[in-house]
Image (cartoon, rainbow, N blue to C red; front, side, top):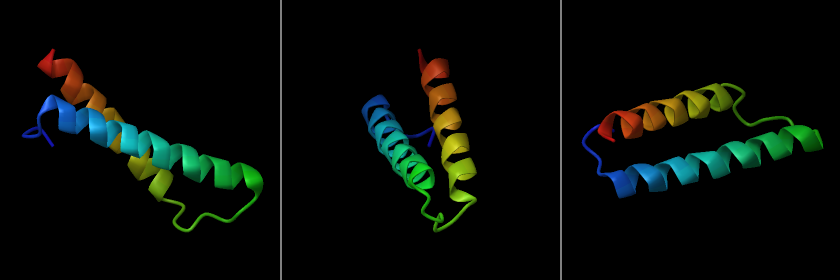
Length: 57
Protein backbone atom coordinates (compact mmCIF):
# COMPACT_ATOMS: atom_id res chain seq x y z
CA UNK A 1 0.00 0.00 0.00
CA UNK A 2 2.80 2.41 0.74
CA UNK A 3 3.91 2.32 -2.90
CA UNK A 4 0.51 3.52 -4.13
CA UNK A 5 0.09 7.17 -5.08
CA UNK A 6 -2.34 9.51 -3.32
CA UNK A 7 -5.13 9.20 -5.87
CA UNK A 8 -5.05 5.43 -5.69
CA UNK A 9 -5.10 5.53 -1.89
CA UNK A 10 -8.07 7.89 -1.87
CA UNK A 11 -9.90 5.67 -4.38
CA UNK A 12 -9.23 2.59 -2.26
CA UNK A 13 -10.37 4.46 0.85
CA UNK A 14 -13.68 5.46 -0.76
CA UNK A 15 -14.22 1.91 -1.99
CA UNK A 16 -13.62 0.43 1.46
CA UNK A 17 -15.86 2.99 3.15
CA UNK A 18 -18.69 2.12 0.74
CA UNK A 19 -18.17 -1.58 1.40
CA UNK A 20 -18.22 -1.01 5.16
CA UNK A 21 -21.42 1.03 4.84
CA UNK A 22 -23.02 -1.76 2.78
CA UNK A 23 -22.09 -4.40 5.36
CA UNK A 24 -23.39 -2.27 8.23
CA UNK A 25 -26.65 -1.62 6.37
CA UNK A 26 -27.15 -5.36 5.90
CA UNK A 27 -26.45 -5.92 9.59
CA UNK A 28 -29.02 -3.29 10.54
CA UNK A 29 -31.58 -4.90 8.23
CA UNK A 30 -31.08 -8.17 10.08
CA UNK A 31 -29.29 -10.09 7.35
CA UNK A 32 -26.61 -12.47 8.55
CA UNK A 33 -23.14 -11.32 7.42
CA UNK A 34 -21.35 -13.38 4.78
CA UNK A 35 -18.05 -13.08 6.61
CA UNK A 36 -18.25 -11.62 10.15
CA UNK A 37 -14.51 -10.95 10.32
CA UNK A 38 -14.64 -8.78 7.22
CA UNK A 39 -15.83 -5.69 9.17
CA UNK A 40 -12.76 -5.78 11.39
CA UNK A 41 -10.47 -6.29 8.41
CA UNK A 42 -12.00 -3.39 6.47
CA UNK A 43 -11.82 -1.06 9.47
CA UNK A 44 -8.14 -1.85 9.97
CA UNK A 45 -7.35 -1.36 6.29
CA UNK A 46 -9.12 2.02 6.36
CA UNK A 47 -7.02 3.00 9.38
CA UNK A 48 -3.83 1.93 7.59
CA UNK A 49 -4.68 4.00 4.53
CA UNK A 50 -5.52 7.05 6.63
CA UNK A 51 -2.22 6.66 8.49
CA UNK A 52 -0.26 6.47 5.24
CA UNK A 53 -2.06 9.53 3.87
CA UNK A 54 -1.28 11.42 7.07
CA UNK A 55 2.41 10.50 6.88
CA UNK A 56 2.66 11.60 3.24
CA UNK A 57 1.30 15.06 4.01
